Image 1 (spheres, rainbow, N blue to C red):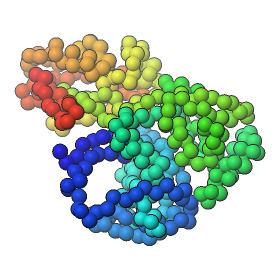
Image 2 (tube, one colour):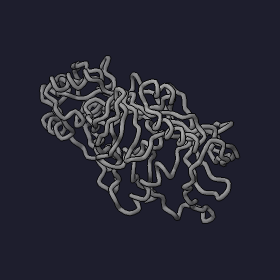
Image 3 (cartoon, rainbow, N blue to C red):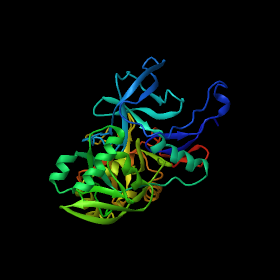
Image 4 (tube, one colour):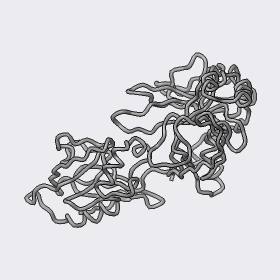
Length: 391
């Protein structure tokens, strides 16, 4: 096998058959330098003609990647991640940033969707965000990525002091900013995932994590390293010590996909669950669903299929019932599908109840055409994807 997916998160990490690589292609060392604004770097990237281009430039800014929440379509958001911007950016699909002095790898130059059909490119520090995952994979460890359930942003230090930050904390933040030659910014919480009680609250300023001052977004990465992390926060003008409780995030995509009536169904991806509202949780529990994250997610409708022909039915919804039988997990859906074997077009419609991310519950009638649109399951068996017919 030429390649295999090992990790799926901020980046996808795959194996590569070394025999397919040119013998003249060196594997670069990883830079551990603490880069600052104005440092010289080399950018190597692919343009939209798939040509390798190179530019010697400088780091113009060190700041968080800010990708707004999609309003209609849930999307994977890059949050709580620091990036490098460069002077006179080239228009590229992505590449790498290299230190011109020793040819070490500084960052991945990544293209990230930012709004409708708009893409920006950012340099993501390899040593901070990617190298620890690679090392865990190389040593055979399980990759553990933890989330506090919070979205952090920067706030100008002067405004933070107006809100009660003491001078000695402001001095430490200023020291951090001087080291990387940026303006001093405090880090605070602007969004919180519902249903996740980490101990942090909206509006909290993060002053310290594990005793170290927090003065840049890269410092927040410590919250993704363990289930419990000691933090000092400023809340309502008072300093509070917390043991922040994070939850473990899945590091791979779904291992099971079901196609039923032309509707593609899978376990709820994290990015879709984060996009739900409080009304979603309330309505789902009213329908008797307790484990919200195990719900079956409708991610796609195949063109021309029975599901695609239903007026007003769109992806990005969750199944609640099929023919008045509760569907609370992928295993539950397979059980319900097994009871529908042998149906013909003359047997009429199957009633399907769904819920949207806003908590709106609706019902549709799905007429199965098993001859032309058979039901099947696609499953990963640790080495390859295997398709199993369910009808």
